[in-house]
Image (cartoon, rainbow, N blue to C red):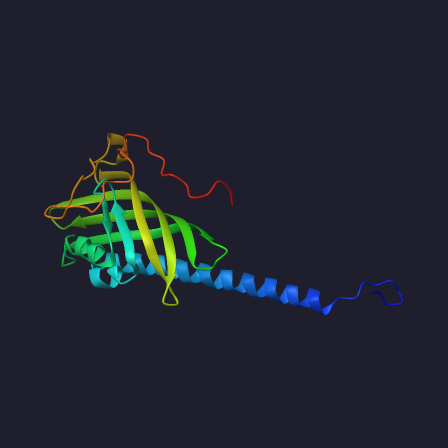
Length: 206
């Protein structure tokens, strides 16, 4: 229907559709923030060796795969893996910064994918110090009303000694964690710098 001046009249149905669209956008924005906070929280917990808090961010059936050490399946296996990492203590530095997110939330509002970059500083006084950089290709799931990490896959681009730099090559990737066998083999074969590696993208365009 039109008003006398020819101006289109907005129908109740159109208004309802606009409200639905705005609510969907708001939910998506909230989900984006929640997922970004979730991943950042993971980085902060790992930074201080708070392994149980980091493991609690994973879904019940969540998986973790770092470097070439295979896939660990289930929250408790993730917890077990994390507890095998070095202890945070005096003289230690762990700094896995979570940067440059590209997050895509599925239309169902229950699943999501994200790509991250992590810049790593790790070392111990009087022992060793290294730089590293990795790409995360992760998935997320809404579990009991909260976003949780469904899979965390860290593809290492390089590790190097801090005083030598990446221009002199890199440190070989560990293929296993002592005393802890993975539940599945690594997703794909690769070597880090000086070999070139491109972590598979979960998206073709944004």
